[in-house]
Image (cartoon, rainbow, N blue to C red; front, top):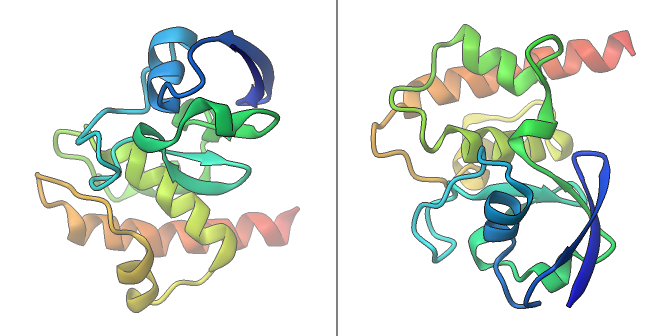
Length: 158
């Protein structure tokens, strides 16, 4: 079945089984490897990306639901020359240890900051429920607060 959507600002059309998880379309068909496979059950969050601005666990999101939507992966969040505030904060706070789960955490954080620009620790606990086996949660919390500062500063300068 032919399914069309925008991914990182580019219109794409893929001919795949409509029930294929979006994760595998992004990684194996389109070739964007930043979104990771973790558990396959939407529990860990390694596969988090945005669908129309909402954080979605793509391992359990059938590609048919992406029809006509705007998808953003970690590759589309920012780049080396113009990182997203979350990416900038992650670098400043030296968050990753192994780094495998970090794209999912960054995507979940970016979606949260769009709704809650100045999150409390309670907001972070309620919204960022991804899993990190390296346990860099303390550095992530610092980075989320830093990203909120950068996000607010960017909004004020726009």
